[in-house]
Image (cartoon, rainbow, N blue to C red; front, top):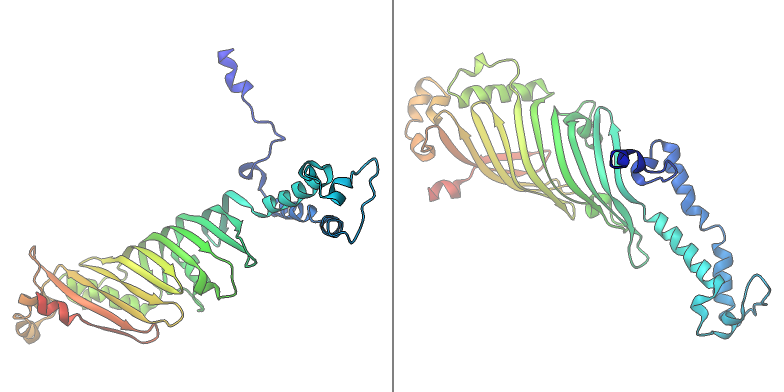
Length: 325
């Protein structure tokens, strides 16, 4: 019989799980209807279990129901058939509404994601908390940005991978203020859709390698990677990297989703020295400046700050860190 184990250990086709049941929108509708099915006789159960127990109504026992334990507050009330059915049906409805999701696969545009978690009842009247683990293995940055940016086209395109916890507590606050995220991301082969912005990135790549920016290639792709946390409408980024040929930028800071206030500090590492990023007389004047920003292995390390708002960002040197060097 050992050779038959595979044939004997079959899951019955009638045994549905969250991994096998949800295959179409109609399956989700069927599961939702099942939640409401347990509420069908809830008003009757509520009246019987409250009014009869309060002496406002006297239940008459018949062969089908035994109301005497309910009328008399009997110690054996918990074993009464009507009581156990009422509580069992109510909690079965709660169990169904607590929609524990083993795994839900979703897609939008050309990006797919996997979400695992649940929608759980909280004590009190506020409602349910949605808790999910979200994974995007092979996504497109432009698909995600289209949902967040109100513009004809997304500001950037590229290959996106992302993992994050997603917690949405109940309450009347705006979603952006109560949503909680904690995750990490990478973006490969990123390009800006604005020709002007991409031209600046191309020129930056040329300068930081000590080359003529006028001879920049048509497209220089960028790479991003970092971690993030969102609490109370404030996005905290402990570390993020932005790499182009010739330069690597390391930043950390916060961004207010409501206030749109930016507060970042970091360092720009370049292959070329400051004086090598320009030519002629300017290059000679910048020779002494090289001493302030020299890296041990060559090139430059430039401390920077980014402030202001999303609509009017400000960029500058981090003078405090320069003076400490």
